[in-house]
Length: 355
Image: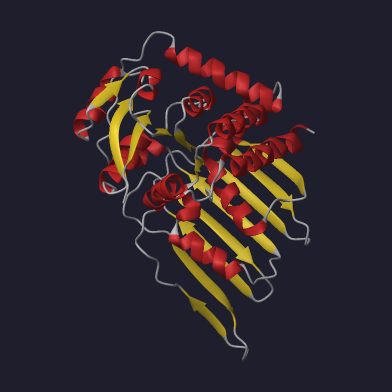
């Protein structure tokens, strides 16, 4: 098996909790030759902790090194780094949110096409064995109704279970520059909006995106966003999507910052069958998602089953797929072109609220 030399840009929580340990596990597939962060302390710490030979504070120096691929998990926006990576001939795995506006997405897609390399979105939940089983079960259903509930506590409650380190050494202006970039991309996407709408937009792009891309895998794209409600000063969103067959999806994301118990469920209903997937928080390791199937069999008997789910980590599986796309020229299941559809849906959900 050919090992791909990869560099990681962004050495924060998601890199320390998931990507670096997983890349370390996937030693037959990847060789991490460099990491980068604008915080020199974070870059040096991650390099030392995971035995990476090089660290940088300027991503351009990483791109000039011998890496074939990059994993982008730095603070948003990511578009500029992604375009530069493609222009340098690299394959790029872009953590969510990939971007905020369609214009950003189109620039990234065009750069990827010019390079002829792989561009994969960090959509780990579609690689989750529980989701894959639910998608299989839903394939032969005449779906009438879908419900998504995403009850989200403060990530700090779960991150404290891990040794995640930060160093308070960001260069002057780094935070302001990132905020300006986010604001410009947000205005490009949804125009001027009051603070509660801006907050809701970012929670859709940064967290509920997981529910939206999974929903698209099962239901396709909706024909209409019939209703959006933004409440709790933008810390909660409820929307209704309409599908071509008349089905509806009602989705809710709500911030419950002081409640430990994270809840994220996808429920798919037909006339005689229900499939429910329950996910753990993304900031956990070794906790499996679950799927349950309820229905009525051909003899009229009610049943409920909870299939055995493989222990494969969704984060590991998406990296394996990225490797497969690079080495074996496979088509990415979670391409940037797919991600563009989700960016548009988020913009449409906000648009239904703004009117």
